[in-house]
Amino acid sequence: MRHLVAATATLACTAVLGGLVALAPTAHAGEFLADGGFESGNLSGWSCDPGTTQVVTGQARSGSHALAGSPGGTGTAQCKQTVGVAPNTAYTFSAQVKGSYVYIGVDGGAGTWTPGTGGAYQQLTVSFTTGANQTSATVYVHGWYAQPTYYADDLSLTGPGGPTPSPTPTDPTPTDPTPPPTDPTPTPTPADPAPSSHALVGYLHSSFANGSGYVRMADVPASWDYIDLAFGEPTSTTSGDIRFDRCPVAECPAVESDAEFKAAIRAKQAQGKKVLISIGGQNGQVQLTTTAARDAFVGSVSRIIDTWGLDGLDIDFEGHSLSLGAGDTDFRNPTTPVVVNLISALKTLKARYGSAFVLTMAPETFFVQLGYQFYGPGPNGAQDPRAGAYLPVIHALRADLTLLHVQDYNSGPIMGLDNQYHQMGGADFHIAMTDMLLTGFPVAGNTSRVFPPLAPSQVAIGLPAGSNAGNGWTSQAEVNKALDCLTRKVGCGGYTTHGTWPALRGLMAWSVNWDKFGNWEFQRNFDGYFG
Image (cartoon, one colour):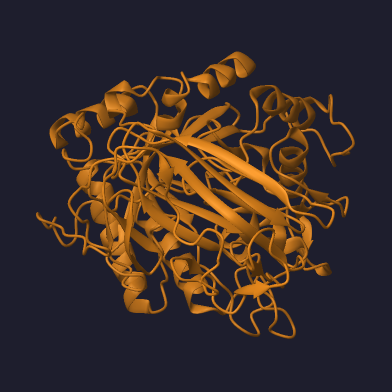
């Protein structure tokens, strides 16, 4: 999941530091990006993936220079730039791109892409509106894994200026003002709802604000069965020490008190709902590289669960949290420390809290379904080591796993069991991706190492709640087509599923907040479909 980071200022460029452009206020519309045409001849002003991005001549749409990104098999060749923006303001981001599977967008918001431009430049455009307290936005352009070099030129972000806020520290150190007991007594929880029931899962922005607005726990509608508190984050990438800090009043003026928050959690639980702490997210990289980090993870997560009286844990490890080491080729017997230690930590937590402990996971497609083609660094070490890296974790915990809701968004094309590439944004993508989880698949094409299917009651489809919530939004009509196909084998289009699963658990949304922003369209569609 992605959320916009709070940062610095607004228009009229004064300095560029690590991709963050400091700006002075202005009263008129203008260009926000520094060097959107790359005419400096270098990547000044941009934060880009090293080794795969460069400024070149001979490929420009205008001027003399353009960005060239060569993803190869190890990344997406992304460049991004963070700029100051004004709250409650509309902006437009556009780029001229040339190549196959080129993406542009704004972190935590709208995005678009093209499957190919036919050898010529094509303009891509997205529009977005900032939130009430938002003072920065990060825009990006990237290609996709194993695709040829793409080119981008004439990138532009336009809109009015805004006030210059106080600078925000780049990497603040989380604090825990009131340390809880070292060895708290586990919180008892009621039994999980019957696995045969359909469920609606949503993330609640609890530690930050973005353009969707703050939602109090007590105001979450009763339709939401699993409420994931976003996010618990580590004090450092490898510490394993997870902290959950609620959104401060300065950032979320409507935030309730801790006592009100706890009371609302108890009220939800009395209604049979489950409230979990979600660990990770886009900004919360967690690498349990040592047993000490593993133990710190167990201890700190337990303290969060007991302090707030939660029902369990959601693992939303993204970015570089999980990867596979050289020689780690069998998902059934992993050897990479970050994977082995995470499995051990989750098993320890499950044993501590017992059968009522709720465990969910929200990996991206790159870490799961891409494992059908690629697993880890590969025999020659040339692949992205993160490919399929969630598979050993899911497999080891499958007996304890309550729900897996893979994020069917922020994804490039993924090959399905029909050996065709499927692209996000329509029913076909969700059908193909979910069919893989419920059918199983040979990992990296090795028929002697088949990832077994999960039970339908363990699988939900992960989606953006609205068009502003993430790259790959799917209309409710297309969501219903996917559900019709998977649960009744009706209207499957050109894809043939390997079964029919009426017990498919349901849907996950990023997020409750974004659904409220969209007048609860996602929730209302779920209620209408499942009754």
